[in-house]
Image (cartoon, rainbow, N blue to C red; front, side, top):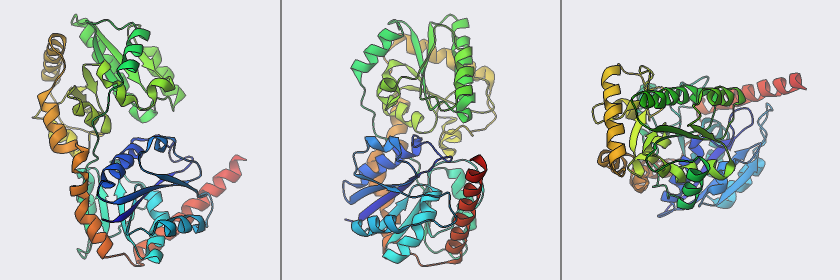
Amino acid sequence: MSNIVIVIASISGSNTGLGGHYYDSMVIAEELSKFNLVNIVNLGDFPANALSQSQTPVKYVNIQVNTPNINRNSLKKCLENYNPDVIIAFDRMAGLIVRPLCVELGCGFVLVKPGGGKLSGYYPNNPFQIYFSYKDIHWALNRRKDGYGKVCCIPNRVQIPQQDHQAIAKLKHDLSILPNDLVLIRISRIVQGYKPSFLKAIRLVNFLRDQGYPARLVIIGFPQCESTFQEIKSQLNERDAIVTLKEFTLNASRLLKIAKINIGIGRGFMEGCAISQHMMAINTEDDLPTVVTEDNFNYFFQENFSMRVTFQGNEKINQERIISLAELSMKEVVNSKVSQKWFREKFSSEQVCSLYDEILHLARVLPERWSLDMLYGEFYLKKNGLQRFVKKLIKY
């Protein structure tokens, strides 16, 4: 048994405390706690609301990052009380702040890169790293020179979302959804970056209605970008809905079974597979969402089912598959065997402990020492903090 602390940041101007990686950290913490002592530390200038749902104990430590000199004293005292064997940092900023403390505490350090987006600025090259995207792992391995440590790709894992049948019934009633309606769902924070997925989903239901199917789109998500929210809302058909009430947006995966077809991004795709829905995803080359099949699954998997998936599709074949999927969904209760298979083999949280075991063991046995890369990380923090400080002065 190891004593593990997962550290994750919530910093104004960088994130909202509601992103998917917070939920990823909670799932990983819960699974690791079956065989280890696990705690979560949330550092930053505001507590992440998403972590309020954590089954693992969470400690919030206030740290101001809009300064050239970050005071780590409160964080150090907190970590000393836990006396961890290994600290897992769940984002770059958390890693930069906690990494020197691991040296002082004599504990192991593992950095997780949960997102698959392009990196801007410095990214640490510490010995022990986990990436969610296979595209990133090739880049990371090419940076290694001495072979020390371990760099691996472990895509995020999800639990089977328990369905809230009472909330589903209420939502169906509120939206006047009929038994024969073909409901498609898109669950997501409503932000600029996800706008293409919403617009493609709208085109998809319009296409299905043109083909004679009683299709209805239900978008569930918290609006974090007002302009994106208003644009999506203006393009929705009167039969479609965008649901933003907290009673539905909080832990929205509990409402998945309101729909038969799921347009999933990232962990949203994986949660749909967990309850055997028919799955679609976003390929930037296709005008409509793409039906995910065995022959194109790996294109999406390599990019962790993000919005960055790009491969040469065939629009005519995709439209034919969409119609076939609609026909199937109208005739039977949703129970996709291929989605079940993907979940068991690729996404199930039950595999977390075995997947993390080796890197956590190595990081514990080989604690990191000061390096040039760590010194550069300190410089990056000071530079970043100075920039934030100047911006704050200009603002006020």
